[in-house]
Amino acid sequence: MSDSQQTLSSPPEFGGSNVPPAPPVPPVGPAPLAPAKNTFGLVSLIVGAVAFVGAFIPIINYVSGFAAIAGLVFGIIAVTRKGKPKGLAKGGIAASAVALLLSIVLAIVYTIGFVAAVNDAQHVKAGASSGDSSGNSLTDPTEVPSNEGEVGTRTNPAPIGTTIATTANGEPEYEITLGAPTLNADAIVAAENQFNDAAPAGMQYAMLPITVTYQGTKTGTPWMDLDVSFVSAAGTTHSEMDSSVVGPAPLSDINELYPAGTATGNVVIAIPTADAATGTWVISQSFSDEKFYSAAQ
Image (cartoon, rainbow, N blue to C red; front, side, top):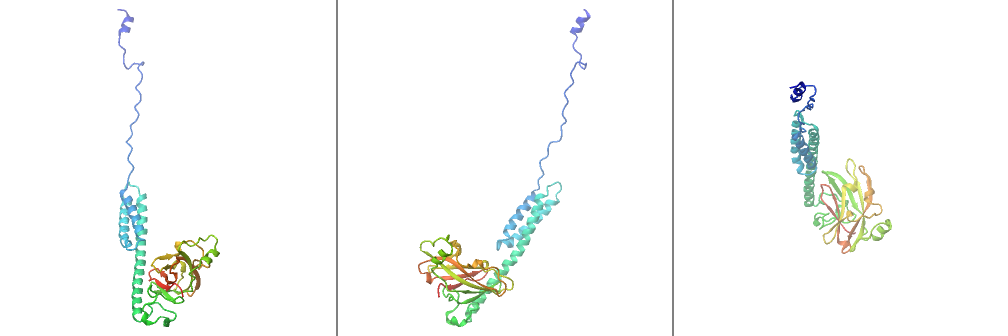
């Protein structure tokens, strides 16, 4: 056999220069890790937020303080865990701390207000039994016969022109005197502003002048401190919020009053036309009883 035939019949030798190299194998890295979670931080934030809202609700805010403490505990646990994100935990600690502070402060405020209201109510009863006008000073006590009982209630409203002193947290707050009301002030309201709406059917605008004198030790803003409404003979209640009209010299124009500061402003309320003169005006204040005045002189 010739040399050429032997060459053709011989199998190729592997590893020679004519064999292509194997493709490179890409390096295999570690599998991606799932993002770290901090459940305690999330719980702290949720509990702190709930405690913050509850701090503003009377009675519930007594419990919200304990919830805020729990939120602080969860937050502290969360920030001490190694390798865990701290963002939610820090937010939970901040929310819980603020909620705890608000719960304590507002619980004290609500408690003081409640105790003052109870004391005022007891003072009212004691004054009525002794012939005094339910703990509220009248400008002229002789205007109220002692056999008529407590003055300033719906069954025995104070006459227009009577001055009644109110209290807040057991301390003097305002002296309030109602001037002669205009039970049908439709023309006055219409002339005051061309954009004022007419009174609804069966209703008419009534305008009540109120003179207030601040008797406290700090400052008072009458339109924020006092609520004025009208109770009809049928027992329905009506307030300024029922209609959006502008009256002359409104009570809301009276700015902050310092001790002994006095001012007069008007309140306009849409009242039922039927038996308007037999209704009553009502003045109320936070944590104090409502005071009723006759609808007209």
